[in-house]
Image (cartoon, rainbow, N blue to C red; front, side, top):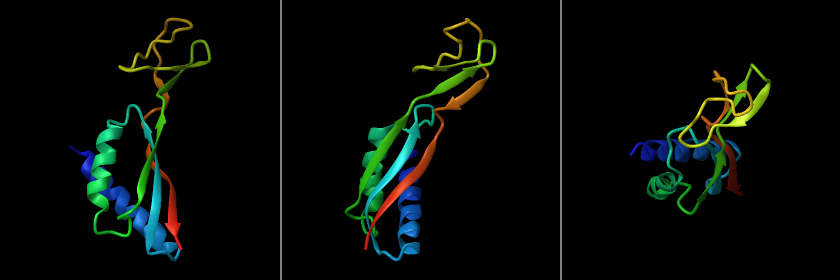
Length: 115
């Protein structure tokens, strides 16, 4: 379960951000997770609960913002949703796409510190 190592990294980075802002506690962390990132949101929530114990994030909640996988078709200049499992064929012109626009994100977008 690689979500535990991801959750541990989130806890460490969020703690560093809070300390830089002069706080010793965090109430919530928001992360964007693309549907092609290889992360299961439920497993990440569970792993976060384990990883946060005994840290400045002990009472923090994890907010996961899902990011839809989207691709760009150069042939007809259209952006389209890939779906799951991902299908890289343009639904407008029936050509393959080679440009992924979104869906691989895994980033912290917000840390709410308790001052």
